[in-house]
Amino acid sequence: WLCSNVSVQAAADLLSNFYGVSSMRIYAPSEETEGLAKATTGTAIACYYPAKEAAYFTKTGFVFPTMCHEFFHHLVARKKICIRNEYEQNTADSFAKEIEKRSV
Image (cartoon, rainbow, N blue to C red):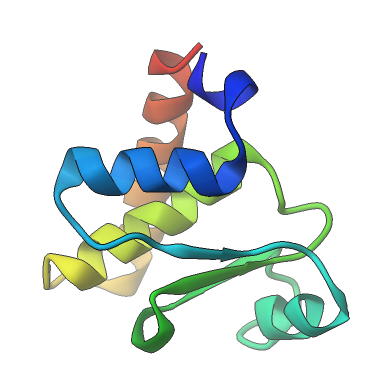
């Protein structure tokens, strides 16, 4: 339901409310966000910037599962959870799959 009935920003806001954290700002694909999203690895389809509490997306990354993945990074940053980057990436993938499965 969630992934097909609300905008990406609205879904992020609902998750923020549920988890008790500030809203994650969503930046839809544009020339600027394409560059920001790919700045970290050159191949990323989205990227979360903790200092800005914002996620930047490429055109291919602007989908519900990717937003959920980036939201997990937002959750880790806002709750000040200390986690190794490799583990955080894998857990973000699992979180996104679980949220998507439960929101249909």
